[in-house]
Length: 508
Length: 122
Image (cartoon, rainbow over all chains, first blue to last red; front, side):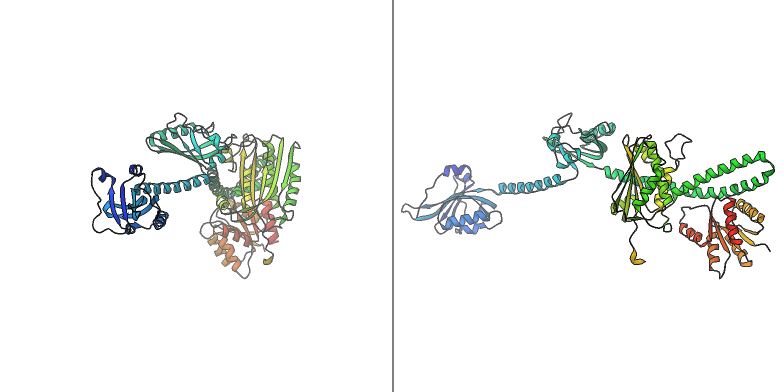
């Protein structure tokens, strides 16, 4: 048998908690702590020696270490730094050891057993386990941050005044338009711009300084200059020695638009109820005026000088009933009017556009883009469609001051759950008709009110402010919905949803 | 013998002006202020034409029209309407209007009224 000298004990000593010896029968005979050696004490093992194997446990963490140990012992070869789980009451070790051992022989070369060193690695292993767990969580969090639709960044809060960004996730780059590497090193507030509310921005800065966290709804600027509404949250994290500013930015434009649309719908509905109720009362009161003016007019045949006065009454009455009728149209709901003959939508549109062409200056180009089939049918009142297109067309022409392009676009649109709630329409298939101009556009403040009856931007006397509210009512009467969007200086687009005629041949 | 017309509206001004024009046309006019009075008149006499408002206190015009439609034979009916209100009764109102022979939307002119009257009591 090949014998190994006891080597490198001095070296092991440095990194060793115990020295041990196992005899040729495999019994653990010595277990001396290195501290005890210094103090001249002997092995602390008590009672009859027990086989070394009894002290070891088989566990998941150190399964490989135990296997290697058993293999080495079987072959009487040395082993080094093997990790095993053990239970050593006398050494107060209930955890893990790192073992190094070499076989030894007597002067005749007879195998005497193993001698070696042991180190308690329980604490180290626990730390390693903890680190592995942290690493696992870290990787998971990084994946979440990488996949997050929210913009997430880290910055140095002690790097005043800029608090430059140290890390930004992919969403940050995607939403802001900056390359990821360009974001790092930029000041935390670098997306703030002229449209960002200055007070809210300084409040955000102040609150995070004072309370360690802050959030605000702000308009931020993308790289291309466009803006978006964001909910920005800043939280101071880390510890005293090394603080970190964690920022999240969520694009809430869609929510803000949704809220604004809902608010507008609610407001228009309330106005509609008011207008409907008032129109009803006024119409009743107008009735005697109307007939009495006619009755009195008859009697005045012998007083021709008074006739113009009666005519004035009648003219005013006509004007009033015109206004009231239009107001009523705004207030009407989906009336499910008796079915007209469904017509091919494109054909109908082209016919109406030819009519509109005569009303609009020739310096306005009229274009169209049909993304539906020529055979697709629509079931709406032609006169009402003319009224809607004329109103929108002449408004657009005014907005373009007689120069520009008016575009009609038709496409299919399926209303899913999200849109249904935002527009108050039932699920189903719709046509979406876009009417766009290249005119002066409207500010958000104007946009929010365009459908209100009597709201007008024209000088007093030039318009009743009923045109778009009538359009709103007519579209609602078709079971549809109209919305408007605009960019000041670039143009306005109305989008009209109109139910498609469902093919119910089976019912016929 | 002149033909009899029942005129139902809660507004005196409307009744007076409409009745005046009907009488001018040689018709005999009975006025009722609400649906309840109208039903009393209808149960006690025969009319060629009923001109009725729809929204009225107590028994409304809709009830009058519905009652008339349940009879074995009925006079012609012209409903007068101030236009859609946003009330929950909207549906019933529309149905009542649909049961009438014609609807006059207020404010209507003499010509609108007389054309219908001449058509139904000629």
